Image (cartoon, rainbow, N blue to C red):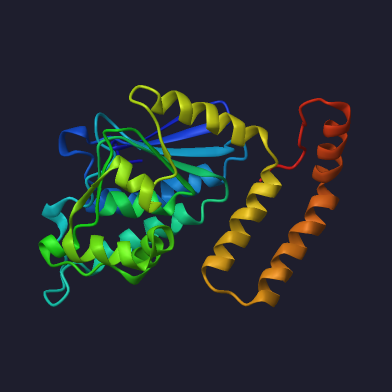
Length: 262
């Protein structure tokens, strides 16, 4: 694992920290390339029930390291390899099989927004600053990244951000739907930890089913395909004992001990 990508564990919650604070956690080409492997290792660990993604120091991630943007071997498309690694990293985070939370302080710019929008949820505090800045340097944002952004903020705000490269403060990001929670200064880490523990206590099967169904609907899959996907999870709920345990726990007024593990 690259030294600038650090994983810590606290019970069922894993924290992936982008640790390059002196560069506002800008991701080098090597870090983008390494992210899918890091995430695959966490996905394969059944003890990990929730993943938190954050940055070291006062920033979340200032995007890709600008020194790597023109470093590819193809003169006609010097960003080709970086773009492939970036898309692979986004896919690995977007498809992570358990709930993911982006914990955002300070700068969340460009590639930082790509990472945050690939998480299931985004929490920030008043220091959060968000921007999609390809127009400032002549980069074409990939369709995958545009779609992720537009699904959260809508086409009009996506155009505003992509055309202008203007930055949004935390309140504007909350208002547009780019973030889900805006927490008071000093409360961010504690509330993310509390909420992660709540997620870890819930039915992992239900969460996995919800994640796949939401993704299928967002991707525009036809109704029959989504119904078949849901039906498979209905059967799994019964077969796993998850539903029976949930009902029993509710009836007996006790916390459930869900048996299913990813």
